[in-house]
Every structure is written in structure tokens, then in C-alpha cells.
Length: 125
Image 1 (cartoon, rainbow, N blue to C red):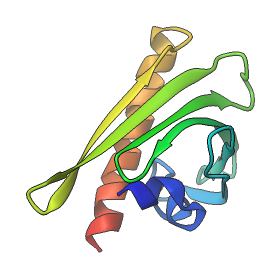
Image 2: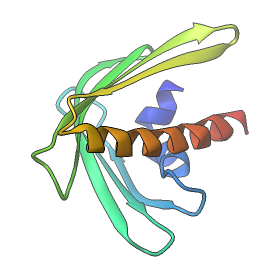
Image 3: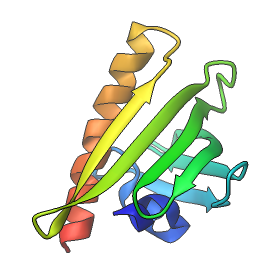
Image 4: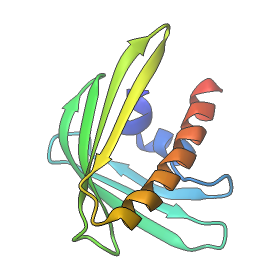
């Protein structure tokens, strides 16, 4: 599961939140201070670009990075993900914090939930 978050090729396959969405760009410079960049394309062709900087990388148990959309770089937030072996699988704990406001938090929650559904299907295949 850690690799699904740190491989550009794997991110392209599961990251976009909708079934008809695409990820034409996924770039991962996996080092502290390295950048993460993702461009998602909606079914109507609108693109959403975001990313951040890796703050902590502890394979295979922890990943911390900043996140901001290209359109609002001043609204930087923090994503922390932990991975723990659990009954032959992996328990992923995801925390996204320091949002600009509650509306931004709620929109991200909807998007992440849809992406996590795709991640689960991707890993099960």
C-alpha cells in the first residue's frame, strides 16, 4: 500500500476520485524535500493540479507531505498516512489537516473517500 502512494505509475491508476476521471500527470520525487505533483482530469476535460513536498518518508510505515492546489497555493495543508500490517493486509490511517476552512475540508473528504474506493479496488485486482 505504501508503494501505491509513492509510485507515479500506481498513483495514475487509482488516484482520481471518479470512475471516468484520469490522471495524465503524476510525479513523485520520493525524498524529504522532494515534490509530489498530480494533475487530474474530469470527464468534461477540466484539469485540477495539486501537490506538495514530502516532509517525512519512513518506508513502509509512514508518509507525510504538504498539499495545495495549484489554483490556491497559499492554502497548504498536511497529509499524514501510516501503514500497519493487519491480518495479512495493511491498515492505512489517513489524516489530512490544517485546512483553510470547513468547506475545503468537506470537499477534500468527498474526494479522498472516492479515491480510497478506487485504491481498494486497484489493490484487490
